[in-house]
Figure 1 (cartoon, rainbow, N blue to C red):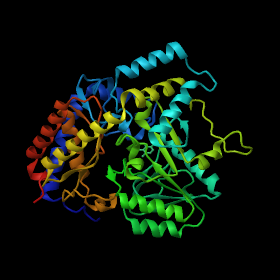
Figure 2 (cartoon, rainbow, N blue to C red):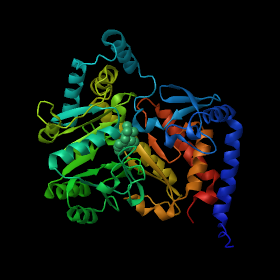
Figure 3 (tube, protein in one colour):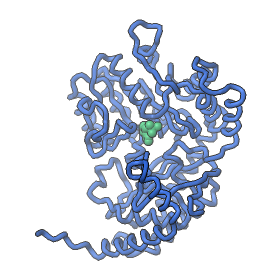
Figure 4 (cartoon, rainbow, N blue to C red):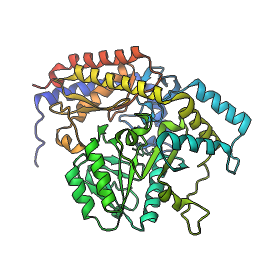
Length: 446
Ligand SMILES: Cc1ncc(COP(=O)(O)O)c(C=O)c1O
């Protein structure tokens, strides 16, 4: 029988530290463990949202307030998960609370009709993100599905070019250069094997017959907060246009980074844009929109137009809250200041981590954490670091940041919350510094 290759001294030391951190996690979180055991009786693996599973068991949160969350065992955390970008405003924003109360008491739920609230919100969305027309959905996944259906109808074609590491929703995911098993219509997708590689993208796009759309994130979010270069994105748009395909920009995460989204800032002039997450102020939300001629495929006055149904598409609660988010809370000037703070935060973190196996990527208020053998800082696509990843160090960091009072995604993404006090950002920089000092032997690149 072939024996396993021996671990290097550094990796053995990381395993020992990780084992000890996991053992402390188990001792410190008995109520989360008990709740997980209970959930196993009704949910597969105790889970209804795969991302939230962590071994040996997930922490179970009982409350969120402002930029903090509390778990069942009574620990308080600074929330850096930020609900993967949907929680931008924190857990108890007073303007969101009062809009919800007003919508409940003055408007009511489930009117089963069009309402002025959806029209006011649509106008707000169109103005903010420079869309001719827009439609609402209940999630970013749905927004992308309907955008692609619209592009297919508009072009009379079927296939779609996407990028390795791209994530466009629960059934539209393209890790490692291929559609994930649960991606819909898998055979319709052609995956460019490297993000940010313009000549490769152009040659793939030019080679696809029956091309309806090119779908791309201006910064790959779930792919690790890897920013797309302006030249790359403009070039992809041109290649799509040359083929007569619809250029769809997925801004479900990135629309928070500049007042009109990254497409507006970079002058990408997309044919369609998809939105979601924070715009709903914490409620289920998505939207897609763009060019009038493309969106006209959804005009119900036109015989044979494409259907776009959804009981909750225009639900009064989300329409009212989302209007408040854009018009009264996350105004352009707030967005600019917040993302400047995010850039400074990321730069400070990179300064502390320089020379170690940890690096930070991203833009503004969205930050990706990467643990690699050589601490690579310049990451243009997931393939750059695929062979160098150190998930053992990533897990060790996660356990120890929990102990220091920071709630993070285990995969390593920070979605900053607007109301997080500056002192907590300082405290996190210190916690990262202390982690690197504590684990010098395994974290510093020789
Ligand atoms: C870029 C991007 N597009 C689409 C989605 C899907 O959004 P939702 O989870 O609301 O379906 C996500 C979610 O993480 C995303 O990051």
